[in-house]
Image 1 (cartoon, one colour):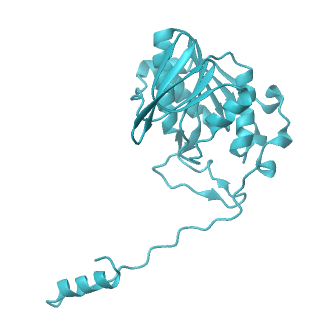
Image 2: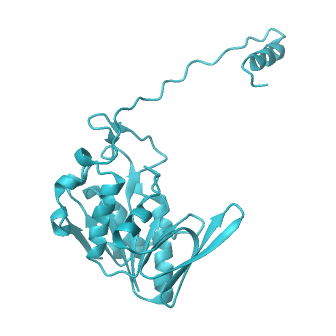
Image 3: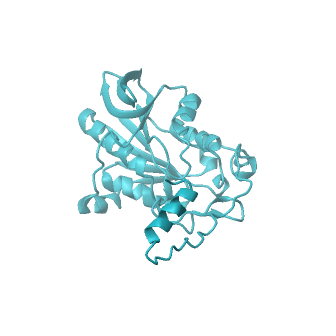
Length: 259
């Protein structure tokens, strides 16, 4: 079975994230970039399916040269090989444009199953699986908490407020996973060393047959027009305690309609 996992390098959610004032895009060059956390669950699930069904796992990412760090993380976890689409013209692309690039890259690969995280922590749009399913003409199963592959059919359980839905679709299909589906493994030292020798193929827009004018910030379907920084916090209110501090505190909380 040929499994492709989509991964994305994103700014670490635990560090400060900024927009570049030059073009109002995420300032990735100066950020602490990591592999998208949700994608680690998709990688782990792909490895589990491969171990059960046989085959290989290919990692696919679209991003600048620095995105190789995300690729190496996936390879060190156990993925077999990777494809990295990198082209300066992609900078500032919206989700719709990016889906066209990913779909073109997927069309050059053999795949039975495409896995991805349910969302990316930078944009949190959760639209990529649906966009790709439409472009590729394959079914999508979103928000999986459990995945099994049996006889050319993908079966998932999707969590709901009242329980879960049992869904299935014929392969090839695209499945997005939540963080309840498994527990991603930590790369071992052996895995980290092995990742350095695994093949990583780099492709440009020309390799995919995509016109550079159709991607990038200038032709994006959505753009950030303006932004403002969070205002600094003002000083807190000091309540002097001259024996009646508790009363003053209660009165202040009442005036703010807190109590």
